[in-house]
Image (cartoon, rainbow, N blue to C red; front, side, top):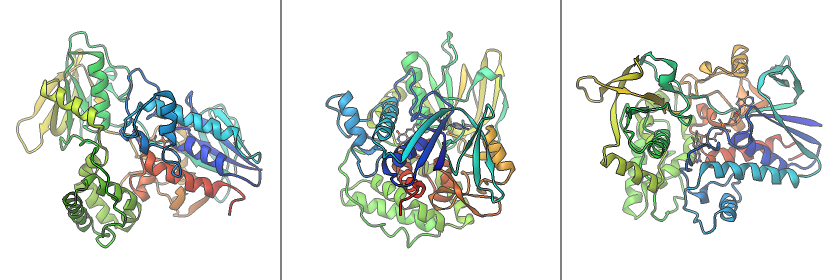
Length: 456
Ligand SMILES: Cc1cc2nc3c(=O)[nH]c(=O)nc-3n(C[C@H](O)[C@H](O)[C@H](O)COP(=O)(O)OP(=O)(O)OC[C@H]3O[C@@H](n4cnc5c(N)ncnc54)[C@H](O)[C@@H]3O)c2cc1C
């Protein structure tokens, strides 16, 4: 009997377990799915919350099964009649779907494979002399012998960007953007750090809760995500010459701009070029030397992020309407300090392009700068132990952890593990931007095939 322990059951862990159960036949296999939270298939993104947060990808593109693109849409249609594939559905519904396909996979799995769900926190791995896993260790000291381990623990809560002087009372900073807001009886403004999709979540929940609240979002570039396209897709079949420009950040993005103009001129949509780049990016990223990656992160990343993570049209329209009413204000600038002043928090920032510092007294500051991928800051015992033993290493840009193809974890000596894998957003250190369902589901299927004992 081979045992595979999957640590974490957000999208990555739940999708991997589902694909393993569906695909495995042959030698006996036990899959231990270990999640510290109450539910599987939710993680941060698909949790049930008071506010109905929406997916930012249309239903027809959210299947967890690459070979069955309409799987989620079919599930949703049974529950909400008449919805179109282009609809942006609630994220919690997607979580329901993930737990449903896992349950179905469990019920129809080959007798050679069995799933055991365990609610616990994994705090350590027991390793053999080669650095390969022997067992996972739970918070209560229980050890579960495991031949193979997959870390599917996601990223960590956002951290304040470097360089901000912060003298903040605990209640003045909301680290979890989806948590309950601080009571605001005097109708003070709310400040959000960051201008990505999480900021939009915070705004939508805040205005639903408090019809008068004024929200100020501050980010370095002041760029709001564009909307998803409603125009017909034009297939971009080949790689559009991007690989010829590979190796140089400047040439690569010049080629992408030309391709986007050309696609628009032919009646297409620049968003298709982003889709194409997402497909090609793992190989393009690997072709960039460290100095070129540094250039990308310094000059291109903000623009990449803003064009890559787009908003449902109706949500963008809502934000624009709130801006027109003056209820939402977007500021481009660099935060200098956050300071508790009595019952409020004083936010001081320097506007982009110069000018005198601005200040605002707010009820609280919500950190919506995005998940932290720098494992050297993760508070979890598991990660601290793996780092201390050199069993995992961060990349030099702190984008995630070093992995080989399929997510095999690299140790400090550069050797790839045979039986220890990572699946989730930290893969971007070596494969760039494997954060959305579209990429993670492919990675989950590839890893399921690798782990499935008895498959060729
Ligand atoms: C708010 C938000 C909205 C998103 N919306 C979309 C979208 O609309 N479309 C799209 O394609 N993508 C979306 N994404 C991106 C993508 O789906 C997520 O990044 C993806 O869910 C990552 O899943 P994960 O399982 O790797 O990590 P997580 O979701 O973080 O799950 C990790 C799980 O591991 C558990 N865990 C951690 N450590 C331990 C431990 N030591 N022991 C036991 N359990 C542990 C955690 O409790 C958690 O349940 C969104 C992401 C976010 C954050």
